[in-house]
Length: 303
Image 1 (cartoon, one colour):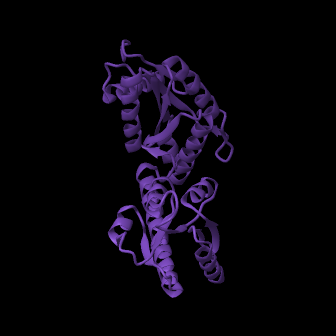
Image 2: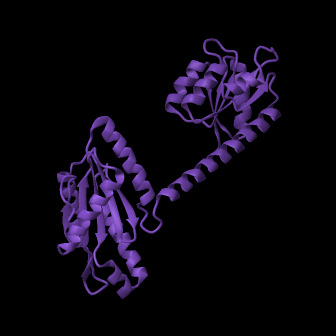
Image 3: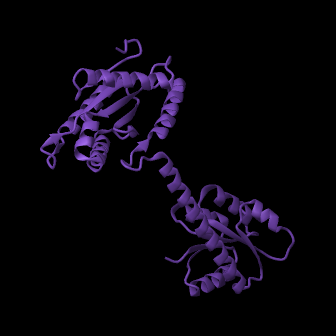
């Protein structure tokens, strides 16, 4: 798809000549007779580049440039005459990506457009790569859930939110029962398949505001904002039953089961206290026979 360009100039002859040239060059073009018209257009339309005159009635082109750079993902080329009233530095300081003088030489405009579009594409590619790297840094490669590093970052944010607004939150710590035996019996490839399946079932049981993480090995965590421990137990029960009902028909009709520990944050907790208490609750669930849920509150003993 060709680049989309908005031409902003209060001189219709200039607008028409630029429009005609850019159309021949296979760009998709739009026109506005003032900065105000351009702002109205941009509310409902995306363009890659705005070419704007500086001197116009009402808002001038530099003010428009500044507005665009603060509100839209578009590049700007500003046009002015040989008046000396505006400098290249002023235009760049307002956010302009390039600068061209009147009378416009279309060959020069074409070169500047190509340069701005090339830099725009490179910037977008860099941004995409950075986003992908960021996602990789917080994502578990096997299960595609968030990883434990991200879990601790999100816990810290929830603690800060609790301190500001006193909004409760809880966590679940989930362990796949007898996973080492399963791995030793059927191999790591089957073990990995189980972990991916558990991750999928976890995600399907969560509410929109909840997030799941692979904590390490066969352990998972779920962060439950705006949730007391009583409500967390409801979510935990849904997770346990969903996983328990998943028959592994390709392995002697075996079933996956999990043990789950639940707890709620208290203002006296450190993050380490909170996670350790969930871990202790999960240990209690295992000690009582696995495939079950246990919970601990701050005032309860952990044995």
